[in-house]
Each structure stands twice: as C-alpha cells, then as structure tokens.
Length: 424
Image (cartoon, rainbow, N blue to C red):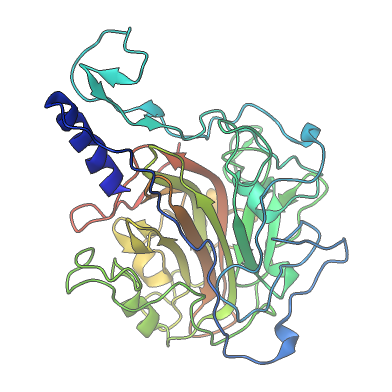
C-alpha cells in the first residue's frame, strides 16, 4: 500500500510536467486465516457447549468455542454480524475511527471550499474508518464473543467493522464469558470501575474460571483454579515467541517472528509451554486511508506479587499480523504484559478497586488501550491469547472491549513501542 501512496505522488508530479500516469488498481491481499497442525491428537480437546445452541464462524454466547484446541489460525469464515433483527443494534457508540477521522491534508490552505479532498492543489488521502459505530452487544441477547468488542455488527460502511474470518479456542466454556460489570467497586455511585468502554458488554478471558454473570450481568469473585483448557502448548499460530528482529527490537524484522523481541525472555522464564490456554482471533479488511487500530483491556493475576520473577509468569499476548508490523503489541511502560514484567501494577493488595474480583491481595491494571499499525486495504489479522506458565493453579484474567480503526495508527519502533494509553 505504501507503493500506492508513492504512485499517487509520482502521478501528481507527473501531471505538472504533462506526464501521463496510469491508474494503479493493485491492492494488498491477506490470507485472513492461518492453518496449523496441533501437537495433540486427543479428540477430547474438542470444544464443548453450554447447551444453548450452536455457532458457526465464532462462538455464540451460550455455546462453546469452535474448533480443535490445538489448531492455530481461524476455524471458520464469517461475514460477521448478528443474524437477529437490526433492532438488536444500538446506535450512538463513539468508539469508531479516531479523532482524526476524515482526511489528512497536505499544505496549509485553510480555505473551507476544498471539499474535493485536496489542499493547495494536492490530492489528499481520505480516511474511511467508520466514525459512527453502532453496537450489537445488548445485555440479554445471544451474541458472538467478537460482537462484545464492537466487531461484526450489521451496519453501513460508516457504522460497522465487518470481519471476514474468526477463530476461538476454549474447550472449557467456563474460561470465558461476557459481562456488564466485573467486581463491585464504583468510582461514584452507579459507575463501576470495571464496566464496558463501549456498548453493554465486554469479553472476559481467563486461564482459570471467568465467573458467571448474575441476572444483572455482574461477575463477582471469578473462580480460580485450573480450567479444562490444554496445557504445555505452543503459542497459537501465527504467534511466535522467537525474536523476529535483525538484532535490535523493531529493526530488520522477518515478518514471521516477534518483531518486538519482547516475548522470548518471558517465554523462556515460564518454561516454554502455555497452560490453560485460551485464544481468540479475527481478521478484517483495513479501510482506505486508515493506518492503525486500537482496543481496550485490563489485566489481573493471582500471581502478583508473590511469584514475580519466577517461572510462574502468566502472559497476555496480542499479536498483530500486518504488512506494517508482525509481533506482540501488548506493552505497559514498554514492558510486555506478563506477571513479572508488569509488576508493580496499578492496583494491588487491598486496594478497593479489586473488591469482589477474586484478585484482592493480588493485583491488576486499570483500563488501558492498545494501539497498532496497519496498511490501508490489507487483511489485518489479530490474535489474542491468555495462559498460565509454570503451573495451572494461580490464574490470570483479562477484560477486552472497544475495537476501533485509527486513521493515524502507531507503528512500533525502537524509539516508540506504541504501548498502551489510558482510554479515559
């Protein structure tokens, strides 16, 4: 896609010298799915259901995840969206696009008459990221896990983020859930600290028990202990803990392994095997003029603080597979999202923010926002994994919400690993 931008500039300069330029109709394509062979032939790893129906191309709330637990890559391809009536959607989310949605301009002409997308006679690339996202995660509806993130809703180009592939792997249906609130702490009456950042629900993934929401959608004291998900597994494809740089993080990257080099030491410290592994994956076509994406998360672990610096190094990995960057994207203060790397964390011990979360006397972060890079027109693939390391007893849990395109984006580099920001 960078070639397309250079082509447009060359065309413009050529026009000034009466040089003709042919249109460039090329576009980047991506697989949208990866397929690997697992190392466990046991058919018992097949995903179970909660007995409330089946799901194709993802996991319906009330049904289990789809696919074999050892398979990396996407289990099925969907057009996204809910099969229910459009009445299930709620307009009014402000999570679409970014504050820069619209167009980036070149030149300094302030004339408002440049409605043709140009400034000072120079063509401008229009950002087509949807700016008026609808939501489709109403409490009480049976929805797909990705719809809680604001993905796959039904709507027009400026209202929805369609996904063309999805994978979800959790043989134990209790390792994940959807919720309207986590814990009991409120920043002020009626405003819980752990509430959705968009829509009515967020996604919970756990290396233990994600807890069950009550009639009001509140999860209190998510259960601990080992879940039934697979142990001693490699990272799901296309994730790789191996260094992908040319010798220094974010430089000379091979496009296959971890460009940030942030995973290998943490992976080795934990014994090189993922326990109680749960992962999710989706692919989406990047809108024209859009160079990034973001989503919100919060991280909690029972391993804090006693097991910091040991092999009990639970991890949360967010993997981007893009033409612009391949590797881990989850950093807090330039550190990967693991028990050892994140300590000291924002909330710990008896802090009231941890009340009734099951992580009292342990620790957790606040809501953070991950930002990544993308290339317009490509098929971006994002994979998310949570797992124990070194044991299967003490657990780690993450909350996930509000995926959105970002017109400008952020390409991780040695100077700026992008990291996370407080979305509030």
